[in-house]
Amino acid sequence: MSKEIELKAPESRDGNAVHQLIARCKPLDENSVYCNLLQCDHFANTSVVGKRDEAVVGFVSGYRIPSRMNTLFVWQVAVDSGERGTGLASKMLGHLLERDSMNGVSMLETTITKDNDASWALFNRLAKRMNAPLEKTHHYEADAHFNGAHDTEWLVRIGPFNS
Image 1 (cartoon, one colour):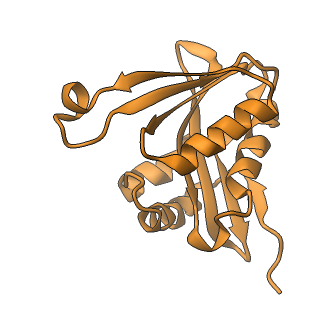
Image 2 (cartoon, rainbow, N blue to C red; image 1 turned 120 degrees about the horizontal axis):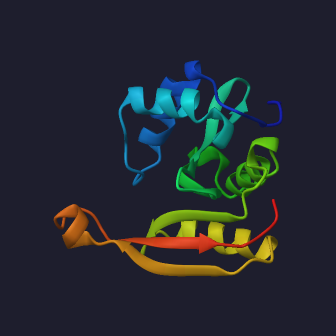
Image 3 (cartoon, rainbow, N blue to C red; image 1 turned 45 degrees about the vertical axis):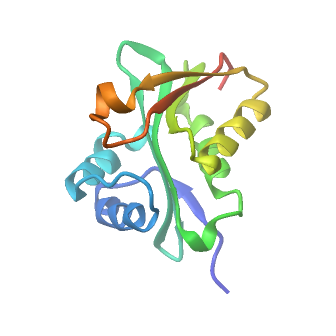
């Protein structure tokens, strides 16, 4: 029987495994391996990796917005297909928000396309669990920002809350 999933800050050596996980999680936008390596290295305090038997099965990347350090921006949430429906994404977000590195964070932001039902459900559950309001607005428009090559991204704001 495989071990429980370990949640922890990623390390630079997790970058390639994170890249492979994201590639398996369509329709997530893929970045370069180097980008994922930087997420695991430079943004380790604001990201979390989930490992089962040393294999990366979950990843949340985020960062504190430099002009608003009270706001955590969640960049991507990736969960391997075999772990979906287990609550892993919620557990990773909870783990992240409970860290000492999140002291002073009272808002969470992310962007979600209209048809991403799993992400809408995840962040609606998070807002409810934190007893915090959730607001959504158009943010990155399909035509203005993506030249029609990507769906509009809605800005989701959760908070204020006390982490």
